[in-house]
Each structure stands twice: as structure tokens, then as C-alpha cells.
Length: 173
Length: 60
Image (spheres, rainbow over the protein chains, first blue to last red):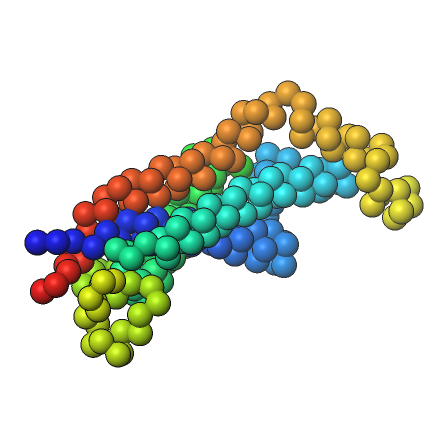
């Protein structure tokens, strides 16, 4: 039985999802809501030097999330040039959700619970917020896994309209 | 201190910030910051390899 490799599109989606998930964290929680900064539990932003120090670490964090997106885009571009990779929306969107979920679970566990450099919403209920962040990540992992599973039989490569061929691969594709 | 001085690219405030960030403990903190990214990168590589033998069938 022949198989169509999905690894390239899964990997691209994971990297892009993790990078975009990191941007959600940085843009929403660090900048718009101003709930925390990268090192706000270690260097509380109480004066201008401490605020700008956290701002610089936030910038380094964003640099790495940007890098995840850039590499993910490269992997996706490479996958799109291959005729053996099924161009499945369900697989790609599912892997984006997987990436966002992995980011929340991994970053949330390490930064909030293990090394304790910041909390989602510092204060009296910070533990509940930190747990909710990881639980939301776990839900994204479940949803992403379901979509990736549903897309396992998608087999049309890029550039082919699946409605024209009823999902079948045309000769030569 | 004026607002202009606080926003300056090269002044005592930014010097203090750079000294605080790039001084002792910079590489340790950077390593901790990069750790989640490295874990995600390893997962992406594994997924790329495992997914190469996914169960998407051809020519059923």
C-alpha cells in the first residue's frame, strides 16, 4: 500500500501554530492587556529600567516566535513544491492548533510552574490563570488532533481542485 | 528626567537596561527563554519524520 507523506505539512503547521500562539501571548498578554512581561516575576516592572529590561526580554521572546514562523513558512513552501504531499486544509489547520496547544502547554509548564519567571495574571488567583492557560493548550491539542485525524485520508496535492476530481489524485500528480 | 530622555536610544536609562540584560546571567536566562522553542523545534523534526509514513493512502 502506497502512502502519502504528511510530515512536511504537519511540521510546518506545528511551527507556524507555535509561533503564532507565541505572538498571541506576547501581543495580547504582554502588550495590549499588560498582564505580565517575560521576567515580571523576577524583575517586577516597578521603575523605568525594570520596565525597559522586561521590554527587551519581551523583544527577544518575539524574535524567537518570529523565527518559528519563518522556519514554518519555509517548510510549508517546500511542502507545496512536492507532488506527494497531500494539500489538506484539515491537516494544516489541525497542525496549526496542535502548534498553538504545544506552545501553551510547554511554555506554560516551564515558565509558569517550573522556573517561575512570570504568571499569566499575577495576583490572588494567579494559579488558576496559569492552570487555565495550560488547560486551554490541552484543548487546542485535542481539537488539533481530531482535525489531523479527520484529514488523514485527504490526498489531493497542491494546485488540484478536489471538487473536480472528487478527492482522487489525477494521473501524474 | 524628561520624556525625551526616557525614550532615547543611547542614554543613561538604556545603558542601565543593556547592562542589566547583557550582564551576568544573560546566557542562563536566554537558555531558559529558548527552552520551549527548542522543545517545539524537536517536536517539529520528529513530526516531519513520523509523518513521512502517515496513513494517507493513495490509489484506493
